[in-house]
Image (cartoon, rainbow, N blue to C red; front, side, top):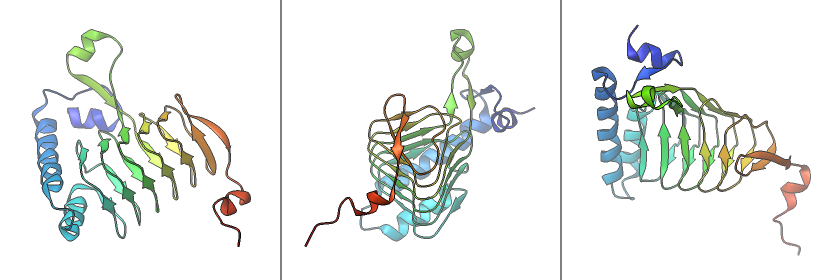
Length: 196
């Protein structure tokens, strides 16, 4: 079994010394570098590079530089995906975003994990578990989502949260570790309206 096959199956794999994996990451980092060097006004070129990097992109993806990922080919984004400055996606396993996902600045989505024992970790072994995000999810600034997490439709993840477990649909969740604070209700639709 190749290291890439092990990676796809969620097994420990050689992330630092396998030539095929190193070549894939180098190609991806070069594309990210090119993306990050574009002027903010070069929106067509930015979108073209994102479409080249990601496995799937919906209508009107918007990623604000700087942006980094490991492979790109494991990332799928739905329509109207928006990511603010400083997004990092470590995509050894699939990372899937639904439609209308908003990501605040300096967020990290990491499918990568490492063995607790130093001997295996020092040999360059790691594992990857998929991350899944539903439609209409909003991530505040500096959120970190860890391997194997699923986040349901319409959830809001508060700034600074570390998401280490699944979050259901339609809730506000925050904290370290992230936990559900409350459901999003009909009242929330009117919370920001001004009275006449």
